[in-house]
Length: 307
Image (cartoon, rainbow, N blue to C red; front, side, top):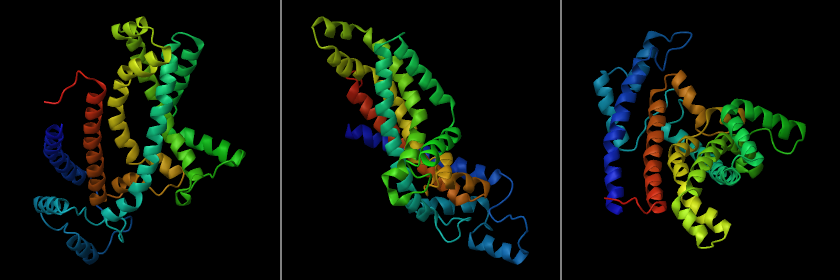
């Protein structure tokens, strides 16, 4: 297994290199620059800024300089947040986004798997229809609708929870953002679990387990769920990468100081280094979580072997 992990990690290097290269040149194709303002800067000021940030050099030279910097772990200074480097912004915001994403993913996997299992066991019954209606609503209703509704109901109307802010990580400040992030994932996980569980319950090894007289909760909770959880595991990889790198909508509405709010600002303000840093962080998360998914998949399915 160790050889497989090392081979996957080494194989990810060309992928990351290609992602960095494409992103570096694509962002510079877009019109405008990081120092373009409504009131243009004086020519001398613009010249000094271009020189300080090494934007006066040929594009190929800027590219080589950037590759050298990220090889040393330096993501460069932010062009928009002048007093911060990209690394400092991530050190401040990424742990907060990871906390919210981890809690939302855990909640989604637990609740979604439970609802999907219940729906599959009671297929074509009112319980099944109710779960699928809830799942469909969870998928179709966007976060920017759910978040204000939860805030209006639980924070303003009943005053049970704070309407926003981080509150130094207090649980009551996390609850509404976590629930808002988790609801669409709960819906997807429930649908995936239901479909896979229905197929698993009709398989031969489940019939054999029932023929041996095993209790129903053992047949469903151990044998059937082990097979039905595989599609959920495959989905969890990219979902985890998306959740842990922050949500622009949720963090903006609830005033959470994560990194999600930086994504759109960086793109709109042509903050080249912050955009590139964001791309690298997301790509690394996807590579790592896809590797973890493969390892968990092999652990759950004995037929999978590492070469």
